[in-house]
Image (cartoon, rainbow, N blue to C red; front, side, top):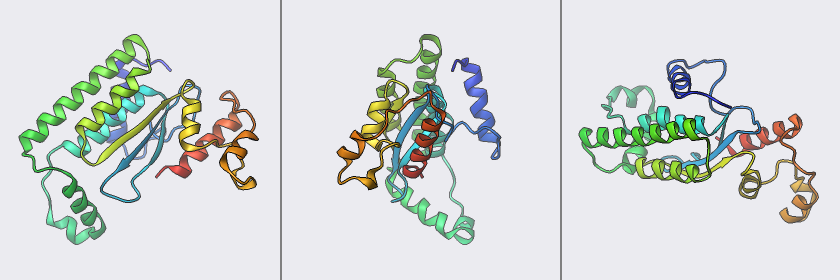
Length: 211
């Protein structure tokens, strides 16, 4: 999938403005160039899972336009949240315990640095194409910038398909029919990314291990 830098940013800016867009850039259908991330959040025990994106650029934009601003934009706490949404207040208190005591100026500085690093990575992707070391750089940028969310794995298809299955399991393996995982995976049919049924099985599998 080939997009310009402007197209990536405009697509995600629109997604952040519109809560009911028809084609959300996350939890997308799996294709031969999808990017799957696995992340966790320290503030909630249910905060880990896998998310699929159309390509690696969309995964970069997910952090550039959603996760990083969400965590690092200075926000004033409102007592109304405690009264109207007690569950949200509990999550907010848990999140606050994860974040070191930083001034608004320090948060903005961290935000600016993270956004610039992600912009640089996206620009390099558009200009030169994807390279495997870019996944490592994305993890480093995210994990050096955020306090709550941690990016554990980045899988870019088709090259990382075997690594994805090793980490999350084979969606075509009938694990319940065999005594162990190794036997189930050995008897699973060969996965074909060009097969729409196989791609749909992978998408459903990611949703099971997702949020």
